[in-house]
Structures are given as C-alpha cells and as structure tokens.
Length: 332
Image 1 (tube, one colour):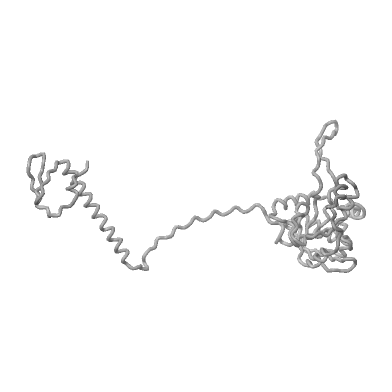
Image 2: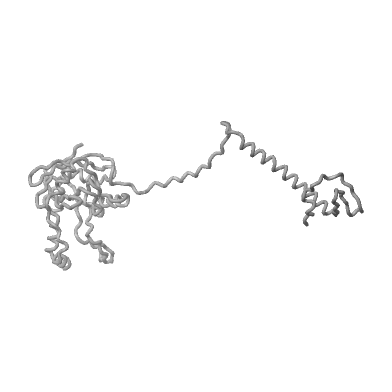
C-alpha cells in the first residue's frame, strides 16, 4: 500500500504544534489553510517512509562530503596508492624433448684432411668431431682418419660432387680395404651407426646437414624396405625378412657446402668444419659428369632394368679430375 502523496511532499509552510481531533479512529493535523485526515495505518506507513528518507539523506551527505574533501586535498607523499593488479605469471613451458644435435655442439677432438686435385695440393680441412653427441660415429671417423682401424682415408678419392655437398667415396667393403680391416679384427658393421642416426633424426629440429656439417653415410635412402616371407627351419615355418640390395659400409662421408636437407635421410652428422671451407668450396667447383635422368632413353632403360642405366647412374656427378686425400690424421 502506498502512502499518501501529500505526506511525502514537504509542505511550504512550517508545521504548528500537532492538534489531535476527532474520534479514536481518526486523527486530524491542524495545518494553516490545510486539513488532512489519516487513518492509523496510513499514519504508520507515512511515518516509517519519512524516517527511512531522513536516515538515507543523512547517510549519503557525509559520504558525499568526504569524497568532496578528498578531491580537494592535494596529493600527499603519505597517500597510499592502490596496488595495480598483477597479471598472472605465465606457466613455464615444458622443455622441448627435441635437442639440436646438428650445430653448436661441444667439439671433443679435431681431425685434418689434406686434399689435392690432379696432384696439386689445394689445402687442409680441419674438422671438429662431436664425441659427446654422436660417440659411435665420431669414434668410427677417428679410427679411419688415424688408421687405427687398420685402414684409413689416405689416398682415397671424393666420388661425388653435388651442388650442395661433396661426398667422399670411403673404403671399399671388398678387396684390400676389407682384408686390412679384417686382419686387425675390425668390422664394417653399421648397426650402432643406424641406431645413432635414428636417435639424431628424432631429436634434431629442422635440417640436420647444415652448411659446414660433416656426416657419415649410414643408409641408402633409395633402397626398398625388406620383404616379409615364410621360411622353413627345422620343420617349422618362420617369418623372415628378405633384404634387398646391399647396405652401405658406413665409411663414406660428406661435407655440406650449403644446407643439405636431402642428406638427412641417409647421413649421420658427426662434426663440422672448423677451418678450410675454402678448400671444400674449391672441391665443389671441380667439373663433373652431368646428370641425364631426364633423357627418355635413360628412363626407359631404368624402367626395364637395363644394366647400362645403372652404370650410367653411378657415373652421374663424378668429378673428371682426381680429388684425393693425400694425408689425414688427428690433431689432438
């Protein structure tokens, strides 16, 4: 129930002392030029509403006054500024599982290669090996450079010269090289090298064979996967893998003149060139047999398995000049 509008609006005249007239059910307030009658219920509600309005105005006025005074006061040095809300600190990112094995690794020891082109010395290449990151591949290269494996890279040729890298032919897995290695109790198995290459492939981000990288060839990317077949052994049928082609012997190595992502599928990075990149670039400038894979005759011969296509393919990118390692060894 709403109170009377006349009661809520303040009167323009001062109120005289209250004079109560009438019966017990009604009370009359004497106001000059006005006379209003209220029931007890209306009077109670009107009184409560006036009290609430009075209390509300008294509570708001001090608050407004305090705010006005605060605005007028100059800033004091003792005034405490509210602290700005701090943004929540970002959660620390989990360390990446991938580790870059390809660059800026610790060099454990150094090796050198002295190279000649058609009998003319062109300089020395100094290689830093990653003994901590690739211990198996570095140990293999150390033994072949120093001759500790019974054989070495001395007097061996660079077999391929590509636009992005140069490739040394390594040691033969047959003939004199294999016989010398066998006499010293060494083998040319590459099982551990493949395991190390797989670990590097999983852990290295981006291109592994970047410029200046030295790598060992541990697999042939063109070799098809082994076929599964049933073999009878001792009266039982067993599943075996039929190997196709011949594995590399893990002695060929490459030196990247430029970033060479095409080597990532076959080569294990074991070090980098510390000095003598001008010698590597000089090797890369030697004239070679141009590829002729776009020839229709070569395509047909390759498709039907003609041996002449295989022989021709092996000769692609081979240098016309003899690029030989005349001397090699460890420096420390």
